[in-house]
Image (cartoon, rainbow, N blue to C red; front, side, top):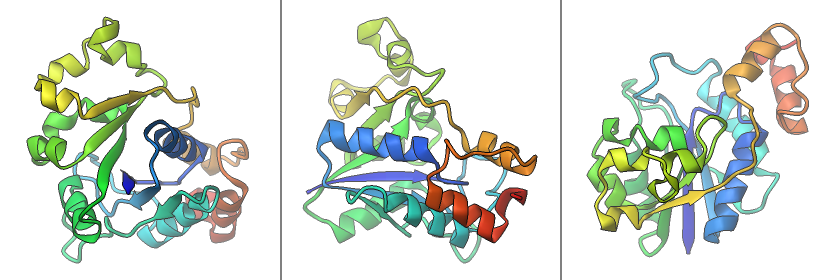
Length: 210
């Protein structure tokens, strides 16, 4: 079995998240993709705007759009309020699926920050990585084979580089922060959110939605 792990704040989860997960699943023939809202990301200064329970519920609604997608609580908040780390999430997945091939799904900008993550060498050994293009972070900009310098700056060994798969995604310039700001001022986000997530936000009055 080939399993993808897609962690993130999902505050809120939106169409670009879904398209990214689908692109990764299609490119690497993933059987299942776990979308895991994170309790507290260690590299983000500010915490999430919506509660974990609300983000989990919205992500579950997003996952209903594709049978390969499944929400996961492996990155639920810790009782002591400490940050969640990807290396711990992978350990939990490995314990649950000892024979599976694991893939971490990240955006290109996030992957380039890998040296700041906990145990980056072990992360590259524990799973293969699906690195997705994002607006402003095109694959040609990070791939040495196309003149980019981004991945080269990580000084990966040939073995590590072989475990990194670059995937082109649709140029969907959607961000959770942009959605929150539009909702705050009462601007429709219908094209950025799935209908079920949009209805949930309105019903729960999240992000000052009106």
